[in-house]
Image 1 (cartoon, rainbow, N blue to C red):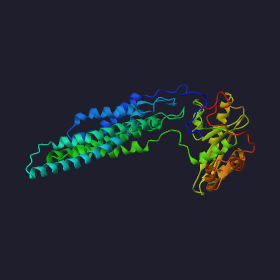
Image 2 (tube, rainbow, N blue to C red; image 1 turned 135 degrees about the vertical axis):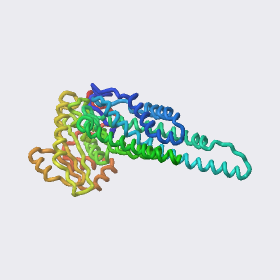
Image 3 (spheres, helix red, strand yellow; image 1 turned 90 degrees about the horizontal axis):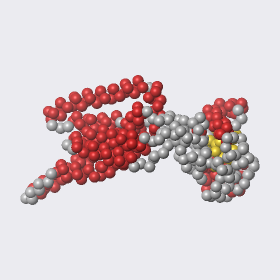
Image 4 (cartoon, one colour; image 1 turned 30 degrees about the horizontal axis):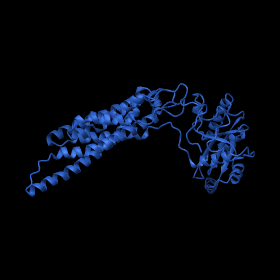
Length: 405
């Protein structure tokens, strides 16, 4: 089975796709590390290491493997900044762990020095320096790892894997700019007030309450952008889609997961499509819905979007030599029920719907390689009454020169 998210029209990148700003993403990952680690470095009295750690994070990010995109819209600076703020959380979390480990080692080394003095051995160790150096190397490794993770997250958020779709931050920047500005002002104001109030306490007591507050505040305030910013990427293959794909393949269909045409007016319509299956006589745009709760029902919106996707693919296929067949929409429901709104929609807009009510059948389909049984199930649940041919051999080329890449 092909799970690689193939593209219709042999092309490595979409025509008109933007170039990934790798340097910008790497610099943002480095800046996120500096912000997340700054209070901890001040507490440890080693602020001179901040630029080095920022460089390590940026380097780890720059070496990430995600370098090409099919996105057709270039992210704006505000979108970059919003996405980059999510990278602060992991570095701030690492800073907290670093402080705890440093305190533990500082205590242990201090006890060793004290015990040696009790035995009459004069150890002139710099406890703080030893504890810092001992924790610096593993911390630097994780700084680089988190920098790479931050890069990957920003890549997924800023460069959707569907041509013609903008990043999730675009809506915030365009329509909720005032909310973003107000939230930023509130967060920065609370941070400044907290540090200022605790600064006096720190000066009187000699304990860095203000810096500890700053570290915890940065950690907590960066949770939202790290966890709530969505991505627009192709979903991972599911067992439900595997079932449908296996039935089509056994019936002689060429199957390709998550098709892309590289055309910005078509690909956004294909985002919910699981795969396209086709021969020279038949073609289907397939969406699979798996619902564990029988009370849940698939609404008419699913059928409407599937019909639109099939229509768009049909128009595209007519401009290629993939197949002369008309692309039909097919909805496969595993478990669950059809809603009343969907039933009414199907009365007005006929749509092929398959239904596998029993999950045990799914397990049987996934477990067997018997072509006869698979074709029987394909006829029973998908209505594939015409068996075209044996499925193509593994590694064989497609029969159409403009086939799915």
